[in-house]
Amino acid sequence: MGKQGKQKSKTAATCERQTHMFRRRLIVSGLIGVAILAGLVTWYAYPRSSPLSAAPAYQGGPRLAADTELIDFGSVRFNTMVQARFLIRNVGDQPLRIAANPPVETVEGC
Image 1 (cartoon, rainbow, N blue to C red):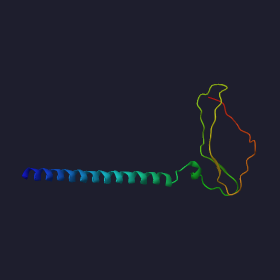
Image 2: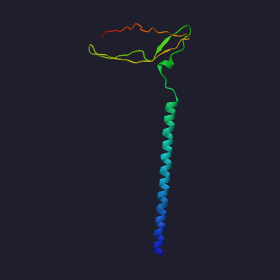
Image 3: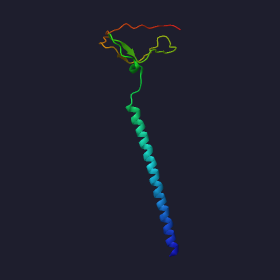
Image 4: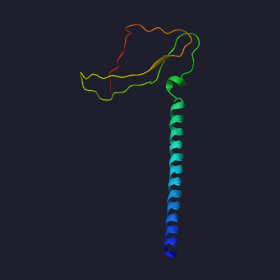
């Protein structure tokens, strides 16, 4: 019976060690998950700086601000359609009115 008592105590000690390691891994995994979640919340909660938000407020009338200053398509083959998207905002202190079909100027060159 002496042998069985030692075997049970070794098995019990091994079981306790495994339980302790499992708990430790669970705690570490939980802490990593909380850190990732906190990072994601911070990423989405704080606004990103954009040229539109950096535009100073203008006093004395309407003023148009765009989120980009230059759109460069590089070399484009003749008769190929290209599109660009950008955001505009009125940073002035009065309403801005845009015509239904405003004139658009395209510049060609090298």
